[in-house]
Image 1 (cartoon, rainbow, N blue to C red):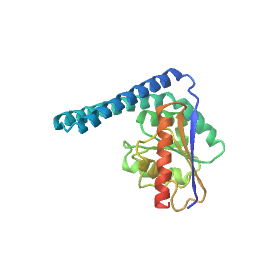
Image 2: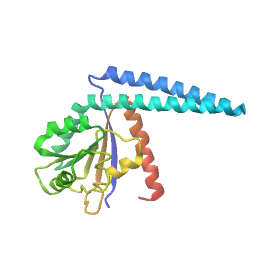
Image 3: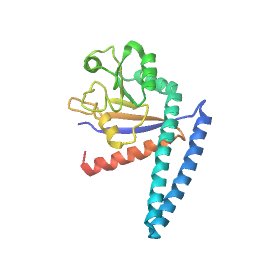
Image 4: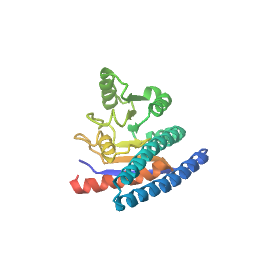
Length: 228
């Protein structure tokens, strides 16, 4: 198969700078709090007090669950706020290529993109019926007027072929590198004749920007280990 090329495109925080600052403040406090709880867990383990250690482990796990929920909320807010920038990028990309596959995570992000592109696009999410699922795939693969495929990373990330495009744009990110790789591979299958360009759209300074760099680095390590 042709090679993959990955790009992280850090968009300027135009109009949402205050929200990105909020993310940064939250992340700094989160890292401080988590480090403190990990230190207490380590001290409890060294003390040989089993009850103290059990409580320290529970406190850390409870905090991490709450932090995960809060981080997910912040990331969702960022994803919604950057929708205009994602749409603008997709419009510009479609001026130079015939078809694009765009992956997102939240339904409101998918819906906003679909509303903008209308009859030029098809969608596939967890809410798409089996009949419409195959219809969307076939239309994207065979109908020249359908230029954009918008899918959720989980529902559209496995078991389908989208080789009509060699351009993949991630409007949002999954936590798991494997899920991102699976989604990429919808276009990177037998029948693909061009190198695959994969773009992650993130806001400069955001939590997603940090995650994107970590995820893509892990993907490269995994692929080198597997000699993909």
